[in-house]
Length: 127
Image (tube, rainbow, N blue to C red; front, top):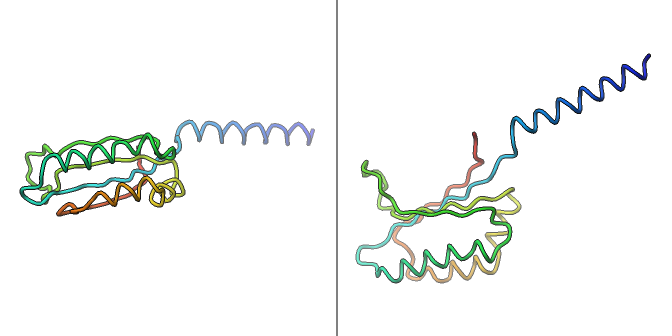
């Protein structure tokens, strides 16, 4: 009788854990980078930077996803930031590996001259 009760408790525990994992899928780490450019910055240079950052998704395997776009908000609250890039990682370790990856370092090196403004925010995505 005790063995049956113990087996039942183990099964209920496993079932509860599996259901909890399905109800709350693993969170993802977002790495948000926003650039603003000095007035008169060459459009070809900006395009080169965007292309180089976009290409990192093919060079660094820990990047789960990548998206980018330019500001189109009518609120005028972007504080001069015009380009937004969002990289997604599975863990802080993956993000940290990305930051020191040679291809990321090469990308940072092309930011010369640097954008006028740079903002970076990392967060765990919530549903």
